[in-house]
Image (cartoon, rainbow, N blue to C red):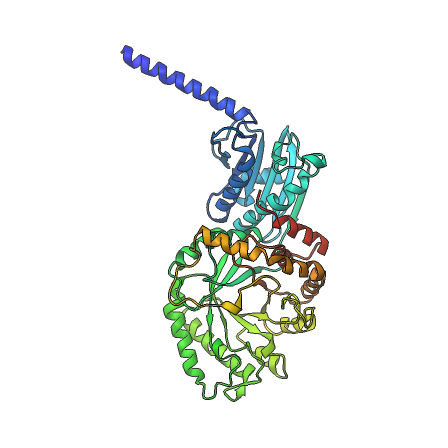
Length: 504
């Protein structure tokens, strides 16, 4: 009995000591800070948002400067057990699933696919709200707060000599601020060969940070870890479209005697056996349009192309009706009499992603026409329901030394050393592309605003971006315009510059 009494007494004492110790930790701003996060879901993109907050806020709050003590950012599930002793909170989620968030938002509403960021002080505590219309929008909002809004607000908290990272989270009272935004183009894409991605995990994170929501990965060999790649992309709010050739190798050739029926057979069989089993959200293809020839196999190139595309797409849809298909089309093969009229007959269920529509940003700005062909872009917008445009105004693959994979491969598993080497090699070349955006960015902004002012807006904008992040200023400029041109070009460029900084 005495031994039992002693054990209970010791246990009670330990609990009391632990409670007192926890109280010291939770109420001492120098020991883990004053902040907590109130969330509604730890799954998918919202789980990634918690990951980003833990990583980036934790750099300044969760370690003592001269100790190895590990402290973690506390996460409080909405409606669950409250985290005590924290006066300040970040509240994130989809409002319909987060009662705390709904109560703090007041009368604010969130537009479709957009998000709200709001900061204020209530009852002596600082509050940051990130409310998204979707889980992906929650993640975009968290990145936007950390990359753009928080450092802007930090500048109001201290004199110019004390604007160091983390000032916001050490403030007694944060500035009041409200920001509501939504995308003006629903699909915002990065196009890349698949095998050049050294690390798909960091690539998808960079896409989410830039508010991109689709990646097109072109391959001519099967991706062995395709399912893992798709699952990771979805957790960052990114759709995966696998890209392959529908006769692209015949571009620029007369190809006499080409049997288009057999070509279609081969495409369908390759889709059925190679690309369909890899999962993903859709497929992307290019055909023989990277050409200035008027004919192929003695027939009109645009008319023959339309026939091949419609026939092959129908065969795929007969087997898999829900398969989403994007047709990548080079404008250079269509800019001739009768070209656009033929393309207008393409199956309206397909999306068409146009390349080469004039100069910068469709080209890299080296010589020739330096501005986009807005008139042509407006013309093709009227042809078919879902039209996108692909830009090339940033660092891309070195085609002078291109080597294709010899066989099936693991995508994005090159390792840290190779990734660091490739990032360093590319960083030396980024300033040349950044300079073109400094000189020509406003012209592109005007071009996009014009396209969005018409009756049918672009469905997609795509960047053939550098494949290994961090993204350059040039790529972030494009991402800002893909999202919206509601603000001035100067504001878009400022936001792009803030996103280019390292993730503190």
